[in-house]
Image (tube, rainbow, N blue to C red; front, side, top):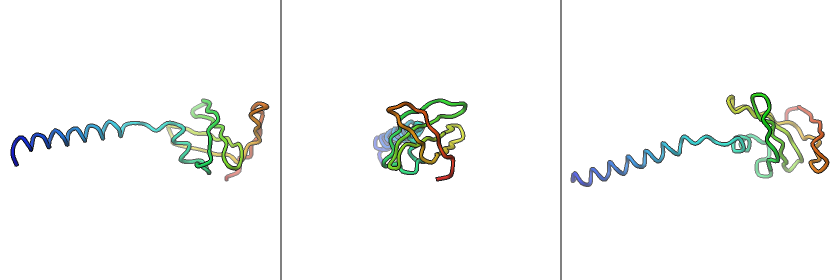
Length: 101
């Protein structure tokens, strides 16, 4: 192999490795993490995310109705609830059932 060709190949491989390393460091957003864990991701629409203690309270709507969830980023922990009785047009006065879904 000619030295010029070898040098070009080394530069090309170095560039590819740098691009891959830089793009691999991107942390997924809270929304992306939550969407991996909700029961019905195709029909889920996140309505609101609120900071609470060490995590986030997520209010969302899916094919079964309105739901609430709690996500802790540092532990990568998500707890979804059963359907919450929400009516966003009247405000967020609601109750929920914490039974496993």
